[in-house]
Image 1: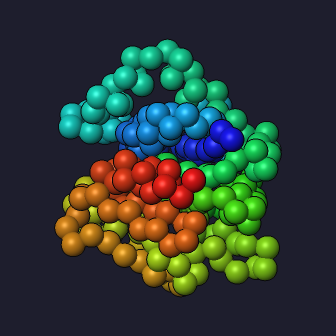
Image 2: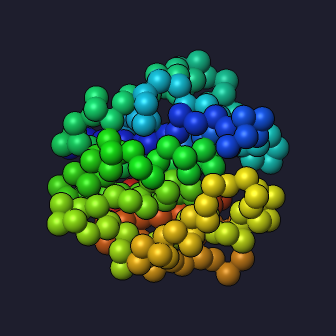
Image 3: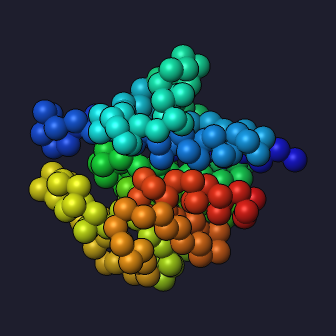
Length: 227
């Protein structure tokens, strides 16, 4: 049976200041998409509002724009996927075996409190599916509750973009909150690599999380293993 994966992307294009642009960190999508495609998985993109997912400008520059990202930028069909994402209400969670949250600072704004994304995440998880995120994508898991009212992340081992990495990236004063701290406050057992910006993925049952953009491939590989 062909596995199906739902990939979540952002609709937000800037920080609180309109002059400070952000969006989807492209390689966090492309690395996973390419690996899933190689397995023959079917994939669909969804965003909180549907439609266009803007791209984080820094993800399009050297050294962040690698061969995978460049192939997407040069492929009109791939660009079309990013221009016409589905809305959560268009998606039946029963059709999917996993949900994968991509990152970019933009997701800090539109992922955490989106009821549609929370519904999809809860339903896919409770039907035995895999829930995954990479980098800031874990902001999409902050407030997701299971049917019993408990937080999905409470007591779970996970990782995501760390506060140290925010500071080293020079955006500590731009981000709307400290995502690492917010996760810990919700009872998550937060883990991180010994050094910033090196690949790290954490698997806790059917919850798979990656720390930073460099972790997209290993995160996708862990998802594939579970599926």
